[in-house]
Image (tube, rainbow, N blue to C red):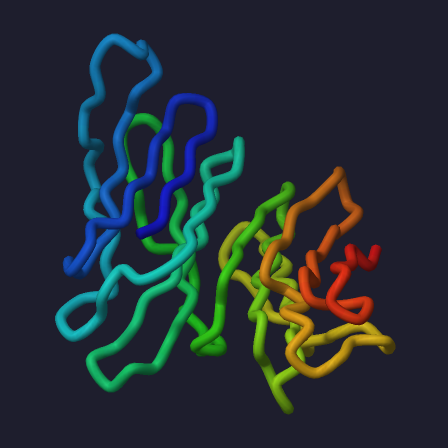
Length: 173
């Protein structure tokens, strides 16, 4: 189940459902489901995994298809509506984290190619999001879980590798 909040908009992934629900909780006294919620890719896709919302209302959410393929989809939300934004893209089945800063979306997968974790950064403009080539660090070790946590500090991407550094953990910048 995923969960994210920013400026009073709350996103909740509903277990065993096909969508994420978006609520306006700005007043903090009551929450109201907003138009365009639930967020969905349609029949055969399920809300499954991390979700993130930016202060500008950009939403990045992970979905699984009935054939067990994983996708990231983007939506634009405000306090009255949510609408799909651009295309959706295939991602690793080990996606464990999503973080947004401005127009940048980081997607961390703890076991990408060759069992090494990887991160993909999407750059979004006014109409769509474009993925970068997935990357890991040069000292990334097999099964270090690089990408299991991602966050932004301004435009600096911080990536967790809890089993890196010989099992002591690492946070390569």
